[in-house]
Structures are given as structure tokens and as C-alpha cells.
Image (cartoon, rainbow, N blue to C red; front, top):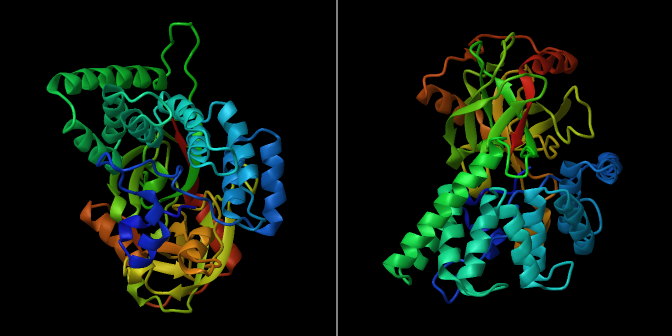
Length: 426
């Protein structure tokens, strides 16, 4: 689950993430910890399963376990163990783990500080198309940190990251350009264009010069749920952001993004295959009250937990989210990595929200001295309905009159028909 939420702009979150955008003497911004999305705290009953999967070589489990140790989420905080697990995933070519390992070297956390090693790992990740790594690598080259200062290389890598939507990279690139000649900028732009073409070529699965096919990597998973019979589905925006390919577990063909709302963390996706069932959305989600029962159905830790989905009940603990955001709900239903995008349902099985994020205990302790146990957030049903209405998406609404409250097992059976695993590949 993500800890992203800076888009909300609240004072609390600004304190929590203050270290992520620090000005430096060059007039640009320094590297950001990556990945910027941390998994939710694993339940004690799932930690051993997660570790077992990591020991077996599951790259996604290794990445999640590294975050668990770094954050001290349910276990004793151990940065050295985080480094160990990120290195194991990085050695297998996982660009996200390579990026995170670079950050640990850069900051000397869990391992001796070594900017040169950070640059080497960022370069491995950046050449696979990892945007945060490209951003950090550009900063390092331009400022001569961990590598000889080179404005052209710095601009070229930063330009690649900016082209993938990294706002900090765009700011840095504009700052770099003011300190470069027109000839240098032109050279850097040509370099980044050539690199992008090569990265895209490899990512597309074409054969490289050595005669071996480029390998796609699954970097993360989330949950997606169908909202109509045309195959249109909803998930969290951060589940699809930056993905070069979207796959649906158990279906052939590729999913594609139709519309996104990054501010409110929503995305509309067209799924491949035949649709036989779809969710029913609450027609008046604003009638949800504090203390009402909610039910989350999704696919957390799908590599190690049930492939048939996971149902977790809870209550609405607050009708607003971070910074009193009226477009969010705070819920107590436990969520795990992979829960992002899951439908939040009322006690009648009608969708009243979309799982978005879990607040990081480590960041809360750092900012306030207190932890935030089981502080989970969902996009509100009212915002979800407005998002679909704005794009003229037809969806099934609940009736205005009384409807029965089915057994929770029936709600799970129904949700399983229209909820799926969405994979992000790069």
C-alpha cells in the first residue's frame, strides 16, 4: 500500500515527507527516497509466509520484505536487513529494488555510505526505464556526486525522467538548462532521445544485439474491479502509474488506461476478455456514516496469500482523510500490499470507496513521535461516482429503496466475480 499522499497538501503529510524534496546549492532538488510507496504493515500471521516466499526467490516478496524491515512494520526495524533483501531482488535485475538499494547507499542507511555505488545501481535501474532512478542519476551527474560532474549527462538522464512525469525531474531539468550552453542542451536532448528509443525497444520485447529477447519484469500488483459490462474497471492511479504494460491475472490480452485522476488516486482501465459480472455502486455514498460497517475485497500479497481473494471487514473511522480531505474515507479494514484499488463495500455489498493508501508508521513517528496504527484511507464513493460521471462511464447503481443485508460470505462470493489482480510490468 502506498504512503503517497503528498498530493493532498496537508500540513501533517508535509511534515511526514519533508525530507523528500530538499533544495541544494545547484538550485535543483536532490534525490528522493525510492520507491516512494511502502507496503502496509503485514499481519503477524502473514509475515512468515512473506519471508518464506522471499527466501524462495519471489522478487516481489523480497521487495516488500525489505520495506517491512526498513519501516519496522510489525518487526524490529533493521535497515541492514532491508539492504539485504533489496540487494537480492536487485541482483536478479529488479529495477525498483536497484533504485531502493541505490538510495540506501546514497544515504548510508543499513550500509556504509557510498555515492559511487549509488550511482552504479541507479544506472542499472535507469537503463531499464526506471524513472525515479533516472531522476536521481541526472542529479548525481550534474552535481558530480558519486561520478564526475557532467552537465550533459545530468540533463539527459533528468530529461528522461521528466518525460515520464516526474515533477522533480522537470524542475531540475529547467534549473540545469539555465546553467548550460545551447550546444550542451542540444547534445543532451539528442542523448536522451537515443536512450529512450533504446529503452523502449528493449521494453517492447524486440531482440537485442546479442540475440536474446528482452525480459519484461512484473514490478507490482494491485486490485481492479469491473464497473460495467463493457469491461471498464476502476483501480487506484498509483497502481497503473509508470507501467509500460498492464496484465490481468488469468486473462489473455493487455489492459489499457483510459482516464486517470492522480490528485484523487483513481484510474479507469479497459480490461481484456469477456465481462460476466460487474460491481454495483452505491447511488448515495454520501449517506455513509462514521461507525458504519465496510468490507474490503482484494488481492493483497497475492504471491503468498489466497489466489481466490481476501475479504477484510472494518468500520468507517472518519468521513474525511488526510488533512480533512472530503474526497477520502478513513477505514479500519486491514489492508496489505496489493490491496490498492480494492473496492470498499457497505454491508449490502455496494461499492462506497476505493482503497488508496496506508499511513506509514515510521513517517508518523518521525514527524509526531506517535505511531498511526491501522490508519488506512480510501477514495470516497462520492468522488468515485463523480469521476465515472465526468467521463460518461455507465455503471450499475444501487436502488434508492430498502435492500437486504446479505451474509458477508455472499458479499465475498459476488465480489470475487468482478474483482481481479492487475499487474504492472516494465
